[in-house]
Length: 298
Image (cartoon, rainbow, N blue to C red; front, side, top):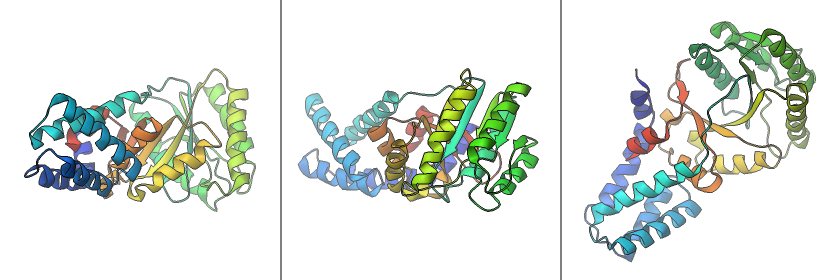
């Protein structure tokens, strides 16, 4: 299946909800204040969020007024242009090698599975990959990652449960340098901002990477579950207080109608969505394509 079809399939629930509501509103509405008020409610219901929805509609109102738009169907064209603009404002990431990608996020978003899928992705891109089992906090986390290593025929560096996560990362870097590895994928324990010791651990890992392998290209990707909708924003906010977030991996996009949260993320944080989960299979994780997302959404 081509990437376009995979993105289209993953976005089906979001697209159906988004277009059904907007088309119903614009099909018989006049371009007046009531239409813009109703459109705000529609965007909020599509999980774009209150703040982003209000700002989008205010910008849309001004643009329609300046262009003297009178037909409701033309409003959708302008709305698409505005949303495309938010994505163009966010920096896009072209991963450079050697790369160290640290995967962060709260419990239950699928970080370990995402690392396995990323390993498969990079192997398909003909890159050498090593996994680092930096989640020494959760029972059996390293065993789960080891299963992915076996499945993707990838090397793995791991210590015993309860070991110092920084030490595992240190050994992983030494291995990557010795073997000329293209991509080092670092798993970390799921954590909330209230777990200050685990948050401090992220900072420690970051310092070790910078100190031990300064010539590598370092990326921190936060994994977000698309089905959580607006909760994803609070997770970005919490983690950004402790470490730099370079990009987003969005999982379970195929299982939700809340894909509108991507628009809220771009509007508020200008963080690029780098990878997106498009299904449950090992190969169902791909680079996010902004143009395909917007085109398919509308």
